[in-house]
Image (cartoon, rainbow, N blue to C red; front, side, top):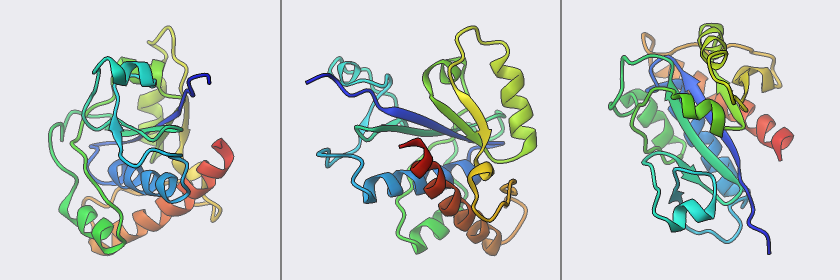
Amino acid sequence: MAEQVPKSVLFVCLGNICRSPIAEAVFRKLVTDQKLSDHVSTILCLKEASLTAFAAGNCEKNSFFLLQWRIDSAATSTYEIGNPPDYRGQSCMKKHGVPMNHTARQVTKEDFATFDYILCMDESNLRDLNRKSNQIKNCKAKIELLGSYDPQNQLIIEDPYYGSESDFETVYQQCVRCCRAFLEKAR
């Protein structure tokens, strides 16, 4: 049997502590719940998108492989590198039974060459990512707004950082809608 190459998606926001880790966690749960992880019962960390890389021990924290999907999130900025997700986002995910385990990191040059999709939250993220991708010779990622998949046509996922817990709930609901629609399209 030929080795199955997973699809890959990187969710991106400004600091990688609010919106993008919520989107990452929501998408991972959707993939797991829809049994797109096939016969894999545990989440395997992989640096490269192949079983060969896993066998060689090339694992990178926070990059998850669910047989058919490699899922991660990152920041356009350096503000929050090394920090966990915002406590309000963690609380929201816990309330909805969505596991969340992430440490903030910045987008790398390799991300543009290794991810199939880079989905960001607002127009500022999109401008930053497009500018960075123009400096990458072998950029394969399709860079889009996650909100472009929203069936309610809310294109921008607003940053809840300076808001309240209800703003994190709004982000969660938007991410659920968008991630479901994206998963259906990308299957």
